[in-house]
Length: 154
Image (cartoon, rainbow, N blue to C red; front, top):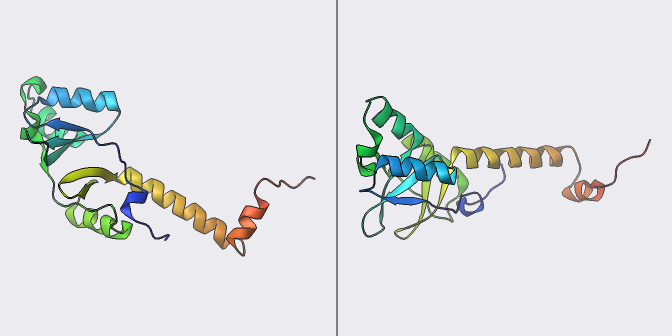
């Protein structure tokens, strides 16, 4: 597998919401941004948790709660582990597996600077497999580059 660090594949656009806001506000924010999770921050802006679509299903829908009356801080999952931007991708994957999580916050100091999701990892794996497949079928990357854009004419 091609070596790399978390910074190479992380999603850098971070969306946060204050812990005392309603779950309905969080759901609307996630819908508006087209994302499946949002980081929860305290009044000082420090990350304290994350809420995902799964949290809405298990902690609101399945319990038939009124979403507008639930505080997002009450349904958040605590952040179990993090990685830094220079953490090897393989190390980040192992942390996700060990903690059984689908989203890994990327931190620099006390600040969230990114997130790695299973979607990010799937895209990275696809790219890696394509590159390895192309390189395996040719003698070198120079051969691949030399043949790009040169279609054989029959």
